[in-house]
Length: 68
Image (cartoon, rainbow, N blue to C red):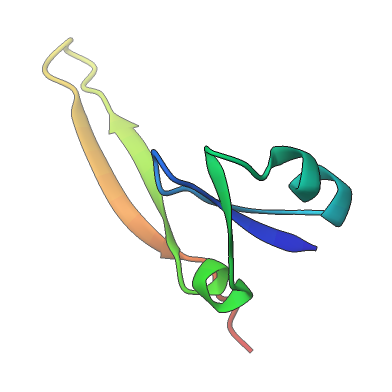
């Protein structure tokens, strides 16, 4: 398994060796696994009102590390 980082967006993904070899180039660069483990993933939650009022978008950061 290899970790790749999108140079434009900064997204880090983990893929197998064959797929990583095909994807690596100008857009995707190899990064160490500890960088992938340390990233947080933002989760969007949309809250609406029954009366048709404004929509509130709340983002919370979720850590990828699993608790032991």
